Image 1 (cartoon, helix red, strand yellow):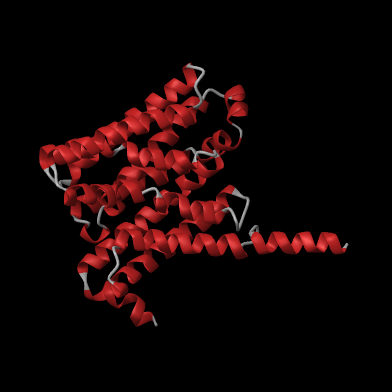
Image 2 (spheres, helix red, strand yellow):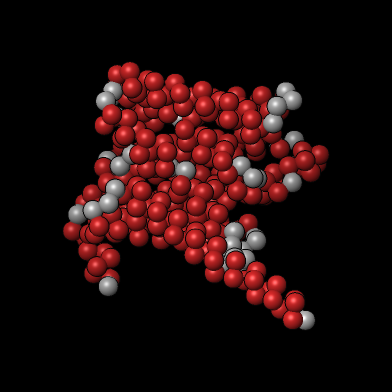
Amino acid sequence: MLEYLFEPFIRYGFMQRALFGSLLLSASCAPIGVFLMLRRMSLTGDAMSHAILPGAAVGFLLFGLEIVPMTIGGLVVGLLVALGSGMVSRFTVQKEDASMAAFYLISLAVGVLLVSWRGSSVDLMHVLFGSVLALNNDALTLIVIIAAVTFLALAFFWRGLVAECLDPLFLRSVSRIGAPVHFLFLTLVVLNLVGGFQALGTLLSVGLMMLPAAASRFWSNRVGAMCMIAVAIAVLSSLGGLVLSYRASMPSGPAIILTAGVIYALSALVGRRGVLSSLLVSRRHKTA
């Protein structure tokens, strides 16, 4: 069994690089997904993953499939969209979900037009879905840096992030760090989406962030525990997805996200706060 699981990673260098990058992304993205979920901003992650497309497209048009220009472009545009939508929601009557939807739709349309303008359908598919099996040194270096920044930010601003996540109005009433922590959080979201961009593409990079986080909610209601469970689910999804991709000749990115989806479905069914648990509790109450 162990040989069946680990034989691809022992024999092939590209599988080792894919596993290393996926595990780092799992440890970095999953806690951010938990905060997004608790802030009821789950769809914001999806919107932001689309919003980085124009920046990546500009980097692609100017330098081809080079990781650094595409990453810098995606990071700049992602931060502009996050800050722009945040400012509109804070200084106007429009709510954050509506401003985010407007910004990301405009950004997505511009990105698709740019890629279609100079590229081919193959290029567009690469930008949208990525390829975790083609991670090179530059991509892995970028993922390492983003993971390190995320870990440091979570370590130093953990209490502020938790407070701003659970009760932002209270934090703003007792401290001035509410707005800086909010923008720090949005920056971490963009950084991790850009980190996952090369591996999973703009469409699927949010999957490794949100599916493990959503699944962890069925097992615990404590923020720290949910982050740890989400990381464990993301790691398991990455490992299982890569093995599934290798053994069944499936695209690696969708295989990873599909594995995370199966774990989410199982968690929703048999988790401590899942469907079966709720039915048992309801039956006991009726019996009593």
